[in-house]
Image (cartoon, rainbow, N blue to C red; front, side, top):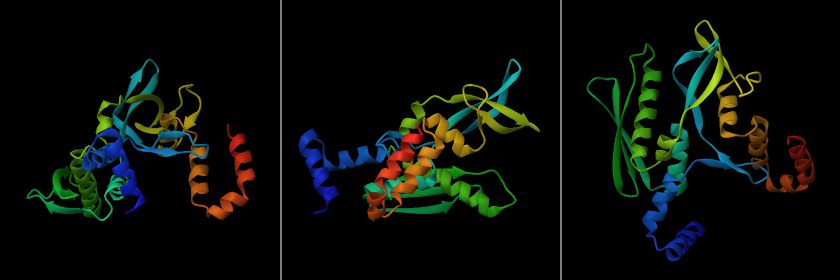
Length: 221
């Protein structure tokens, strides 16, 4: 019996839930990550919703939360390793794809669409990503995002496009989508990058450099 199985059975005994209910909760759990100091922060992405709009003499954009297909696949692998399968079927129009997602013996489907593009590879990737997200949503994966409100950020417009966004102070620039994600999720980009780098270190190197890591982390506060 694996540690994961032992933990699940312990949870069933403690809370009176079936094993399938516990696993379903894990599938639908919020996406988070832990920083080096143990702080748990959201691990979701934010993208522009619609066109920019004007308030007074300033431009703003509404950002809405989303998950990537990779995040969804990683979550399914984490909860049901080797117990899921996914197949795609192209619809007659050629601009839609049906994803049949089977997890632990149950099946859900979702249809992904894409506007006609010159590059068929990009179109197929868009439809695959869209369809697996819609199928996964029927298992509850990412369903909590529907209840999250969009975030309005001031932006700089160049040639009718968003050049970069600003923090709430209206001065500090957010140059990349990654910067926007970190800012809205409430974490400094450098702290997130450092935490990921430390996690990838060999445990022995982590221990040997523990004092240096703590010192650097404290400097980032």
